Length: 117
Image (cartoon, rainbow, N blue to C red; front, side, top):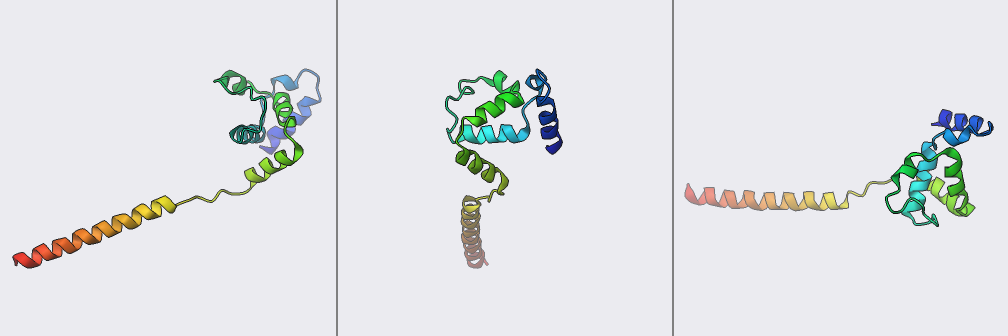
């Protein structure tokens, strides 16, 4: 990713060359997060404009990111760098409920077997 970014910076110095270079993954991730938080105004990607997203160049991405206030851009960069914690709360509840049901069926089975024999 770093090499792609360096390549983009080098070619952006050449006039007319930077328009053909695709946006870096970091730029795309920042834009995705800004769009998700509805911080990008006006958002030109709303309405199924996927062709524009696919053809997004380094310069265009920087122009979109430049519309964000510096503190918001820093916040987006920090969010991308921090690892996400997975919320397993729902899975743990389901697992506990399943174990409780299993124990109840086991006790019913023991009482039935005990009564027959």
